[in-house]
Structure formats: structure tokens, C-alpha cells
Image (cartoon, rainbow, N blue to C red; front, side, top):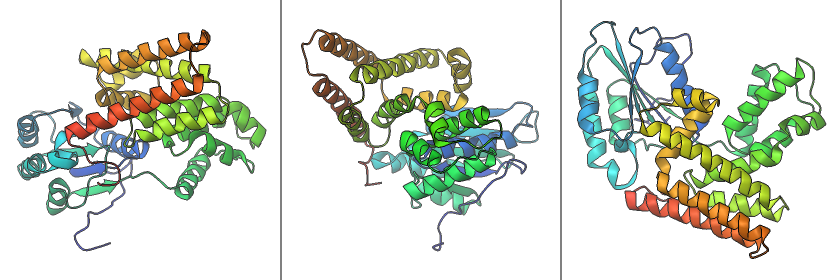
Length: 350
């Protein structure tokens, strides 16, 4: 480790919650998993964990950090995706203001800051966390070999024995999305009942291999590199996947996203989304992030565009491949332009 670099500590479910913690990176599944562990460690607090979600003014963050508990011996504060942790122009004055606020944290307040983007070790907040004796944990997207090792450990932890070729198929379907990998491993574990799983069984159970791959299109469109979503859609079409299935899956995802945005607008949380939409918590947390990435009016526009494309394809008025390509490329450009206007760094320049 280089001098002055943040400590990449590891926390365990049975230990006490870190008093000051920064969790960051673009591997959302592992970032959220680390935050869940921290929240579980803080679960003994009678008043629970106070959540400050983006966007939050620095005044509110500063006040909450300095506040002392009234009932519990400790307060637990989760600050999720504050704009002061974002890259680009916003990391200057806002980052310094948040770093200064951390220095005012009451000794009886434990704080966890979360960013679903990589935070440079030179960022004022990262520097402040280390200086104040806190911990920094980074979870960036894994490379292919690392993702495979992670999946192997996850399968072993579930007592799941996959015959040769089974894990290859699963990773080919889910890619680097560890959330999807974990979900499919859970499904396979329940199906196997402790018995070894043959590759053909993996293909049948993961089954919606095509649906899972299409699912990744929207996730990538709204991810750090929107162009990957357009590229994924083009690859699916080139592989001969059903364009009608791609359109239907995207429309279904956008409909779910719009419902999530409506619930969030009335003060909903990830927990409420999971209950209302009957989906796993990790998917609800993903919807919360996606809901902040693109405004409702754009989601509705995309839904109308997909409907028009579907009608035109069925009427023979447009080429299905070109129509899907234009839609996904236009969506990727819209997301990229929106982030550029907000001052976020371009991919590869963080």
C-alpha cells in the first residue's frame, strides 16, 4: 500500500459498525453488500439508522453529523450518494465542505458515506476520512477472472456444486453484474437441493438467459458508461435474439422504473419499493439509483418510443435492427449528455 492511501479494511457482520466509513466504487452489488453489513452491525440502535439520500444540502449533513443522541448511546447516520462525493467540478468546493463537516462529527455519531462511483484517494472527503481515523473500502468492477473467482466463492458459500461448464454459462449470461450472478446462484441452489448441477440444468434453470442478457441493456444504459448499453443491444440483435423480446423486456423494465419513481416521489424508500413491487431488496436499491439517473419525463418518452417502434415493426414500416439501434444509441447519448451538463467526469477520466 502506498503511503497515505486509504485503508481497505474488511468488516464482518459480527463486529461493531465502523464509526466513520467511506464505501465507494462502481461495483454496485458489492458496495451495497458492504453497506448492508454496516447497517446490520448498527441494528441494535433503538432509533435505527438515519438515512440522508441524494440530493442533500451540506447544511443538513453538517447538522446531522454534529447532533448528539437522545436515547441510544450512539447515533448511526448513512449518507448515500451525496453530490459532494461526485466527480468533476462538483468535487471541489462541495467536497471540501463535506470534509470539513466530517471534522465536526459528534464522538457519539457513527457515519457511513456511500458513493456508487469511484472516489479518488485524493478527494477531500477520502483524505478527511483517513485523517480522522476512519476506514475506506473500495469496490470497483471486477475483471473477468476476478468475477469468476467471486462467483466460485459465492457458489461454495451456498454449498452449490456446478459441473464443468455450468459456471461458464452463468457468467456468459450475467456478465459482470454480480447482483444477477448472486440471484441465479440462489435459484440454482434452491433447485439443486445439495446435488451436483449439470451444465444442461444450469441452462434450463438460468433459463431466461436471454431475458437476463436483455435485462443488462437498461442497467448499462443507466450505468457509468451508457454506451455499453447500446453496444449490448447491438450484440443481442447481431446474435439473432428476438427484437420483439428485447422491446418487451425494456418496456417492462421502464414501466417498473416509472412506478418506482412515483413511489419515491411520495417519500418511499428501497424497503417500500421491495414490498410494493414484490421484488428483492437489491433490485429495489438498484431502482432507487436508476430513478435518480433519469427524470420521469424521459422514462415516459422512452416508453412511448418503444411502443411506436413495436407498432412500426409489426406493420413492416421499419427495420427492427435499425430501430432498436437508433433507440438505444439515442438513449445512451441522452444519459451521457445529462451527466456532462451536471459536471460528471467522462468514463476513464475519473
